[in-house]
Image (tube, rainbow, N blue to C red):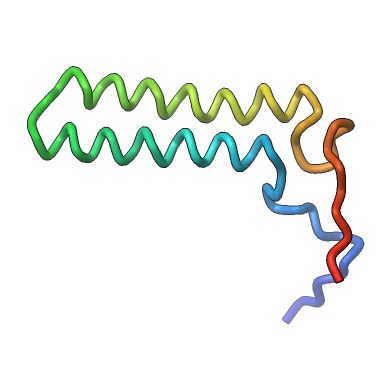
Length: 79
């Protein structure tokens, strides 16, 4: 087994950029699932587009400094 040290933890997406991207993609997936169930093809494809928008939002927010270790991220101490 490997040892995990506190100083080597990359954060694994605990940032506003990651949370925003995941929420957008979850909403897109839920809409797409319902649209598929109710046989609304245009909405299935629109939700697939929203899924891509969610992923791009995460990348853009990360580049703007809201990602893990970003300049605009306020680290919180965990006790």
